[in-house]
Length: 226
Figure 1 (cartoon, rainbow, N blue to C red):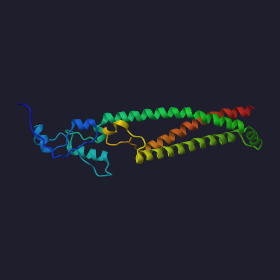
Figure 2: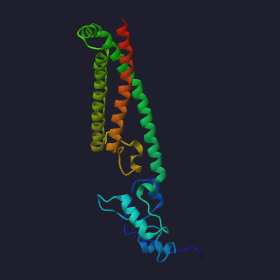
Figure 3: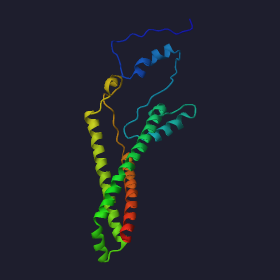
Figure 4: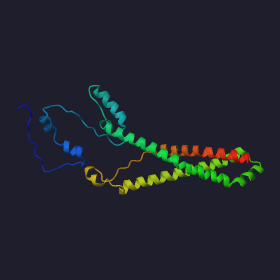
């Protein structure tokens, strides 16, 4: 017989990670049993290391790779599941692009509101001009108003977003539904990263300020001609 045979006696303990991919294709057993069944005495296909909290993973990888040489591969958990994490990064990028387009559409409200404000304050503009204010100074007033609206919207939006993330992390408002039994968690997991918050804030500020610039410039010229 060309196949290695052995028996595995369960001590009555079952281990389940609630993910079909692993529960159907993997078992947890002793190293000696695995070596016998695969006929790899004195060998290991892989070795997993758990680092202490706060350890720089990239630095630790480089040091281990230097010790082992090019004969072995040193991979972190992200590199071992590269396809899955690449898909997640692409989904995140497309979500960012899609929401940025929604933000650009929403900026038409700022353009309309600011245009109406400039028209409504036409008499005040004339008064300021009679008092000696230049067109550039008047333009800066309306630019400041529009930029304050954008900044306030960015701060309030991010604050509400962080609140929703905290509620999801704490109470699991959005559940996984019927498939929850196949996963480790029952609710959609949330992870907040400071670099994402900064990117969102800068995007809102940039798009908002650009949307403010055109109507202020156009309406200021129109009022000047009038």
